[in-house]
Length: 139
Length: 79
Image (cartoon, rainbow over all chains, first blue to last red; front, top):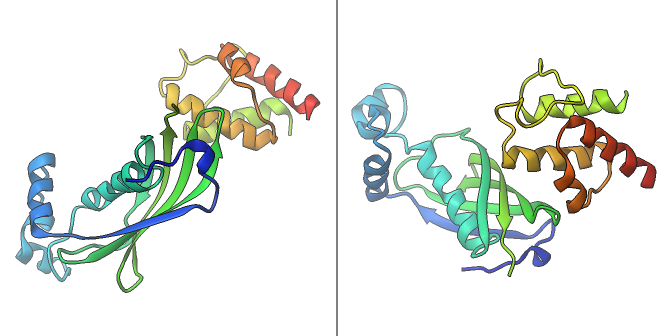
């Protein structure tokens, strides 16, 4: 786990990690959220809609922004303030994703950092973009 | 554009309400979404709009839009 303090965070600082979406993650997310929409649960239904397989929950993909902030950038001392995100392309079970964040602004009055983030598939296709704000605890 | 008009424009952008009307006496009590995180967004947006930096003690004394406009005017004169 990274432990960046505010004075170590500068615009341009970048961190990333990779993760593969699994069937188990889908099951766990359904259990936590209660979202049982067939587009996420029923392969035949999703195919009927023109997708190659059931679609991974957008908010499951977005949950990796939590990992980005809490573990990588800034890491231990972060407290998530906001995530403004979009999902331009669908994700499917088995996709390997790269989660990338880059510091764009540091505000030392409010101990807050802004991060531009995106999540890409292995082939480079961007499946999510986000603007994230997080507090960085001192001490 | 006058400072008051630019302040109004920032408020409308932060609270995503193009019809939002503010006066010098408008405070956080008058705008439902004006919570602590929105306040940070508002202050940071004002700093960007007017290219100034506020001191924390000045921010903590703010009670309404009129005080914010006064702080902006003072900060512009200093810069």
